[in-house]
Length: 215
Image (spheres, rainbow, N blue to C red):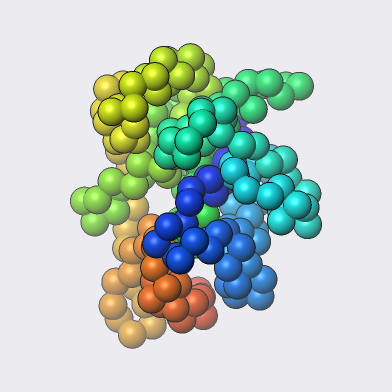
């Protein structure tokens, strides 16, 4: 498999008072910088899916790709855009690995474990699960599925990521919770939707140091 990463940052951020979540201060820089650094330890090549001002990501020196489906059609639109970008590469990628820009602590072994789940079936989708909860935007997707997904998106009622996954061969990969310094369990797929989520995530940066499983 030849895998490229796609950071999904194309949403409206409506529950963050309209502020682009990717650009919010986080750690030593912004949330998007934190995500890029984390994913870079697992994949060399990646692009950012965003429908905003591309100049905001110039410092990252990564391609920025917009949805090809109009109207903020959700994560599947970003996945299609990522698949097409990967297919058009000088040396095409066989798969894309998607992560959400509002989920800063996704597992450091995400690529290894999702890839391992479909080693014998590279035409299948691999999707992350934790604590019995699906995280459909954290998936490994065969680029060859892009035409099928484009057809699927013609129906606005069929834009739930999980629904599309379940209509195709797939493997769900379970990731463990992280034990914090206080002995509590923290979901590595905790996502930032509201200002209080952002405050909690900021407080967890140092608490999770040396607590996460190694790749």
